Length: 247
Image (cartoon, rainbow, N blue to C red; front, top):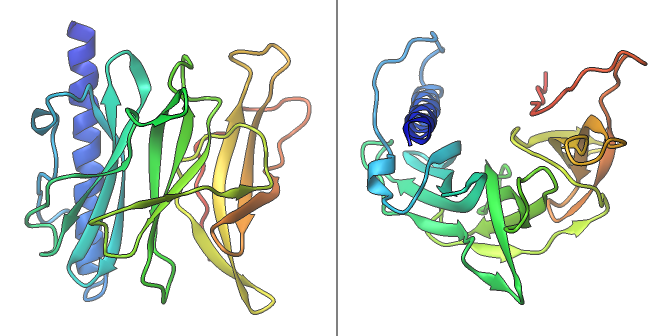
């Protein structure tokens, strides 16, 4: 019990810190140059507000429009360290107050005889579009962990108040783990979206792989393998949970 409590506190602190720092960046970035200093701290959600959650973790923050913020986070369930549901909360006053949660992905929902656990929400609003996407990992709830997940998605057209799940056209068929943000680049005058991911099948398969790679899409609905991050051979290292920087 003592160990579980420490996990809860640590994860909650991480959630709040990341969200609050992101709020400061989004609120002040348009008017001032970043200084790296935190000017204010605001609690957006805590475990005490979620009595049925084992933990809150892996937050993602998006700006829908001026002063309208959306935060998505994993609501963990007992016995599953990295699985649960994905909820969203909304602020329309620069993060001063937040709505009650709405569900993006629900681990209690049945798909035939299967229930899925979800983790690692990634919010993304394409420039010039009135739609907000949430991508996440999804795997059968009876799995021991989320290493063998697939990509799941939902979108909101009303600024995060309600969500609609969609099934993606996946031209990459392997397992994946995501946590990094989506980046948009221009190729041949067309937008291309890049999503960093990694695969770790070594834990359950002695002949498995640990690889960092990038998925790419021109529509956010159809994803294919863009390429692997090269590693020195044979002295490979475990690259995982990467981010992409566009310069």
